[in-house]
Image (cartoon, rainbow, N blue to C red; front, side):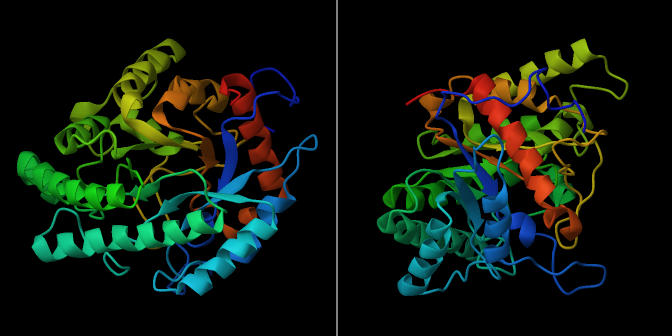
Length: 357
């Protein structure tokens, strides 16, 4: 097992009860499908079983974060159908945390960088997510978390032709969506990935957040795999903070600079590992590769790096953190040892940087 995520201690019982530890359900469906070279989706029930099976020193995951689209969740499901989903999740002893809104073309939404018709579809997707969140909240299975969005547009080249105009268009969509979320008592978190236009570098992401200027309602979702590639400036060389061959000292100086800019906006957090490769799976391509917690090629000291993001986390309303294993191959997802190792590092993160209520 890799030492990449270790702090030099074996797993230990901790008196810290926050943040709650969640596992993402979407690795069972993002990039999966029936297209050429794609693996079939893994059901929500099976993802719940695998998550529930993880155990380290008697400790288990506290909950799950969910993706609000088929085959896991029908965005048009009735309240009664959604209550059955809530019962299923609660039956494993889990809470629901953050929810991924179906904002992309081909789901419910459309590009945030588009015209009025596209903007309306994007905002409707957020409204759909808020309705589902409301059902889960009323049920009692969900007591915290945010609704996750992005620009739903992978055309970084188009954005680059007129960055100011493009960012303004996305910001307008996000502001309208944030008003809908606020009306439902929810917050939106925009997940920065190098594949999403206007969110493809740490600098573009910061500019967008400032353009929206609704910090009480719309913030940043930091994913450790994606933000590592922010440092390298993959889709924005002008924003690179590191060059290949960097030293450890150079890495942490750059990491601190980036996190200091984005942390004040960060309201949701994905723990993850990255090996520096840029690739995806199926329909979700050209993004940061999520690696197993103990991947020997992993670039991150997961526990140490998580601490930069979790500084003052309670003041930003963070009550849980989530492991994102997006685009893991099915064979890896089906191995119980995968989730035991992930839970192990999550417990280390909480022991090092957590808090009590």
